[in-house]
Every structure is written in C-alpha cells, then in structure tokens.
Length: 397
Image 1 (cartoon, rainbow, N blue to C red):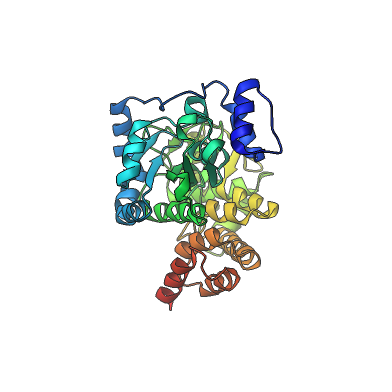
Image 2 (cartoon, one colour):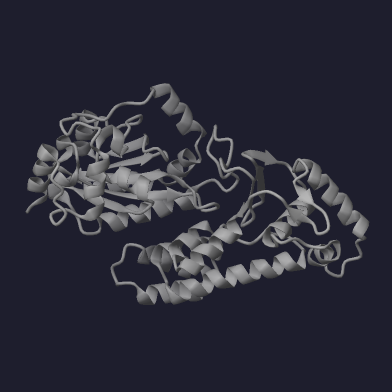
C-alpha cells in the first residue's frame, strides 16, 4: 500500500497502516491529530518576538558566517533552506527562485511554526523532536498542502553542551528528490555548529540556564556553574573544588581534597578551608564537612560523556564533549581525568569512526590526523563529509 493510500485511510478513519509507512512517520501522524490535514499554511509567531530572538541567538552569527554556502546550495538545487529554534519556529530562510514562492505560500518563512502540533508531520518537526536527521517524502507529510514536497532536516547542537539549538531543513518538490539530500542536511548542520561564536554562553538569550534543580557544571572546553537555574560567579580554584567534589559524590577528606587539588604545591590546608567556606556560602550551605560532600543533586558534562560512551553512542558523546577538562587547570587529579576522557573519546572514534563525530572531533583536536585517516578509510568514496575531512587533514599536515 502506497504512502498516499495509507495517509488517506489514516486521516479518514484513523487506521494505522503500520506496514505501509515507516514507524517514525506513523508515530508523528498520531501526534499530529490535533491538526486538520486540510491546513493550508503554518501559523505565524509574533514577528517582533521572532526577530528579537534571532538577533540575540548565536545561530544568527553562525548562519551569517556560512550563508554563502547555504545560499549556493539552495540555488544550485532549487531548494528552500530554513533554520529554526528548538521549538521548530523558523528563524531564517533562503530559497531558490521556484521554491521561494512555494515556501511563502505555506508560511515556510521566519516566524512559521512547523512543530507537529501546529502543522503536522514534517522533517523539521521530526528532527527537532527526536534529535536525529529525518526525511519526509510526499504523502508522509500530514498536511496535504505539502504532499508535493520532500524535506530533509538535521538537528543543530551546541558543541559545548550537546543541547539542541534547532534544526536546519532543506526542502524541494518531490520530483527533485536526491539520494544525498539527508547527508547534505547533516553536513550543513555541522557547518553551522562549527561557525557558532566561541565566546557564547551555552544558553540562548532569555534562557536563565538549566531548569533542573541542583548544581549543573559545564567543565569541558569552558567553565560554567549553575545552581537551581542561576549562574554562580566563582573563581577558578572554587570551580576546581566543585569539579572534584562532583566527581567524588561520596565525599573527600580535607587531606584527600588538598592532594587532588594542589598535588605537591606548597599550599596550606587553611587556604583550602577558606575556599571551601566561600563555596559553602555560595551554595547556600549545601556543602557538608567531614568529609567535604555536596548535599544536592549534581550533573556534569563529564559524566554525560562517560554515560554516552558506555552506551556506545559515540556521535552523541563527541557532541557532548566540549574539549579539554577545565583548560589550563593545574590540579593533578583534574589533569588526569581530562586526559582519561580525551583518550576515551579518541579510542571510541577509532573503533567506530562516525563521520559526523569525527568532523566535530577534528575541530577540537585539529592535529589528531589518525582519527581523520581512520574515518576516511571507512567512508564510501563519494560521502559528502569526505571532502571536509580531507581538507582538515591537509590543513593539519
């Protein structure tokens, strides 16, 4: 049974044609039930709010840096390209001559809301909800008005935290479909991630930070500490103490903490106790003594990378790996942990040289040619990421 017949039966009597469409499409159709399949265009968010969000977003800087390539891709393939926020609201578009007009007719424009609850199944919504690249072809779309479209979308992640910033989507008419459409969307997403400003915060404008209660530590490639959604301004030594306590949840004696933090340096325990006292005040007393131990929920990006590696999800682990652990630290324990984590990520990529993961890793470790060479050896000759990796390899040499 074709996708058209499956869609007709589904919207007509709710029949779940599980053998006719992919499971992810069927699930998305089920989530789209609040929308009429006869919807003719996406709803529009407030124009001023969308423009303000875009101006404050690190995505704007990234898109500006790579817009020549995005526009060339759109024009060469007669595509319309869209970049959204993490709620699948379109922030920026560029289209070839034909697709630009088609896009405008269905509000595939800045401010257009393309989540499933607004306009039904589409690649932007799938990629945004699942965190994976997605293709939606013809009648797989829930809204009949875009049944003559094919869309490829890939999520864009903050490399420092692994947090989703939004998606990039490439759309055209179904008769212009191309087998490398999905791979191209992935490459465009990596380009945007690589062009994000390096001095940005890990949160978007207007976001107060992590919503989870307790302590959230970003330690890889940068240093940020959040307590119950509020950022704490700490000095380097205090951040190092917090990192050590977070990585030793059962607690540390003053002597053990001193050794992990200072090594053989001539620093008195009184100095350490003074730093801990300041920390306890900043944490509203949620740091116990004898042993020193954090008495609140704690999450770190270090533990997240380790969890993903244990699960075998190398791509996600590299995405969450923001770089060296507290760059510049002279704590022997943190230096050792940073080396261990870096080697773990590297060995995982050598064992499973995922192209997207290696591309991301090559930005963090541009002179590690062995990982890039292993990936190129495993890739098909015409893989769309291969030219980028070859360029990285030539630059490193």
